[in-house]
Image: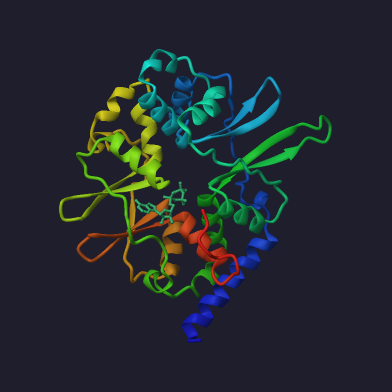
Length: 323
Ligand code: ATP
């Protein structure tokens, strides 16, 4: 192997070793708040609560059974939107749906439920990452059992974003060794890209996300130049206030509803090295990278799961395609 390959392997191995000696608990900040929503809450109200608190997801709590009831994410709202379009006669019922109805909505539209995997906070972080990549779950709740009551408690939720940030911040000496470029390690997706235009409707973007099972649609112009990207979480401000008919509006209008603190999109080139991607993750709130050429034309998409998969599974026996 070339020195480049050797360094790359060594860097990756060191990061894996790091993940094996750290726990999910280590990823948590010293002080944090956790907003948990009761499943008795109206779906309509949950939208306001997420927006007011600048969050895009929350663990659910079933107070009838005193149990953790899964995680609310943008996918659930996308399911509600699909329901609305499949069963237009039920529109009057829509306002009355509670978070406890989400599983029924999922069934009614025939969506494949995202498996709820949870981990114990003291399990190695490596295990949490492997489980994340084996399932479609992109957020894993840390569930502990209270010694006295024997009841489950949700301590926090770890995401791919938090894990990659944690790796980036604590492994600078290892990530500098990852000098192979995006093209050479084939990081990301470059074929059959789902894209939309600024004047496409929000509903078009949602259909693409559902159909391709992805959470981001690059928005391009007639020359395939990247203008922005529409993400699953961008759906939340669109339907706040129950304005489902506004989904016929354009993506351009919808992107104007992004919260002020929204980080926007990050791009990179195919010649960029993995270490520089880790630099971006270290410094910014990046949730995916849109790969462009020198003329800003769309080449591909690198999601956080692509990066995590590479770091964890490259060269391993089960590194084949996973969903
Ligand atoms: P999330 O971004 O929600 O945390 P994720 O990391 O799995 O989840 P997705 O955007 O759902 O990201 O990407 C899943 C897979 O689909 C990745 O391999 C990614 O490269 C690919 N992908 C992402 N966006 C597109 C797109 N617009 N067209 C084609 N493939 C895409």
